[in-house]
Image 1 (tube, rainbow, N blue to C red):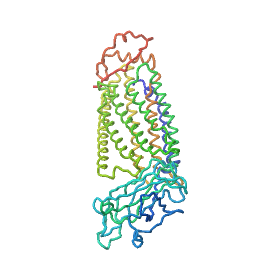
Image 2: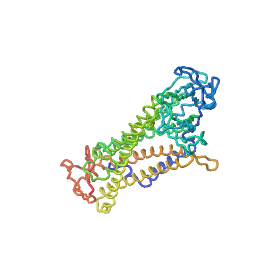
Image 3: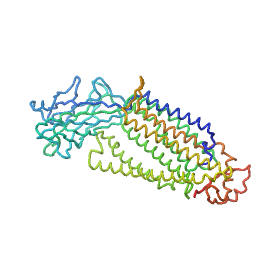
Image 4: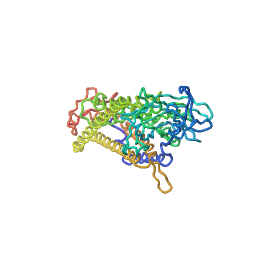
Length: 550
């Protein structure tokens, strides 16, 4: 890949390009920090205990916690005893959203976690490995006075993990267990204005259903959804970045096709990286505003996985193409040991995502972590993916070390070279070091901003200005990787100064040398037709010279 723009660009022009990219990077952070609200909002819901005294509970009847058609309610479980209300007649009802509010497609998704308030009773303690079984019905409507339409109805089992810190004596009856929160529901779109949950806890002593789970006093839910204001800013960024990356990608490939040689492996990988970035940027989320596309979360995970796999593969191939100590270069087969772990790890994460969000397309209450088999399977996929990631970074660190060792050991031979060879290898060295620098900078910024977003409260206040740290992290890092790909395709595109005669003569001079003073590697003599090359002639398909550093 000799003759890239970065090799022929002056320091002044390179600084100008870097300054422009830095300005866009700062703008990306400021858009999220100053314009967008927080990425998500959490809303707490306390269920209302309704009474359904019908003999046939299987017939559809939606119990509203409030409003003109609200259900017959009880304040607590103790009130049910004198009224002779059985446990099977109690329905925990939750209306989403809270009164006088509406949901919006701009919220993009809904994630709910469940918290059970369980009181300690000597005659009704929580057994070891206890499991609560819930009969959950989900309905929706778009008008406050319309009939409810069923969306899902499932039997939802969840394992209880509770501890009681006080001594289990009669004096401590009525105190609450400390229970872990449980995953409850995830929906990949918010296409309706109102949602209703009816949760039953059916008791069957013969089948041991909901026996030994303690005395459940209340059911609490925490709903998390994306903020509409952040969604609009996010969509605007994707809409702006899509044509930017697409245009530079088309320009980059056009520069390559103008060359009289076929594209080399590294050029193909950079182009593939641009395609994967464009695939992420395409704002198909706009359609989720008008369509009930519950698969958007899964689709987004797949797009991100493709981009990260291409990015990791690019780093490996870039290092390998600059090592020049391998016999097999310019072929993807020569990197199967390094790229293999990426493929295996990506496949494991894809299967895990399909087992989780893929099933949630038909059952929003499903979670792979709720069963022992599912938990072991999920952990197996994650562990294998983690091992592959560790192997990848070991390979990458080893290859980077080899390249820097070769560079430092052979740079002393540069002055003894002819001008063409010296410029060629100075370009290789500069190109590699430059990419390592910006790659480390991008990786460091990603890690730093991730840590900052986790340890802060979500926003900073400076005087009268509020900075949303989490939003700045999302928009800034997203913009940074777009600028990274943009800079790669611009700076590593073939330079016009190497087209035609200069390129042919430069390659011809490199091919004439039988021994490379820098590398100490013997180079095969040129073919007979190449020896007759004149200054006014061009090679039909000049080949990239091959060297070995030893």
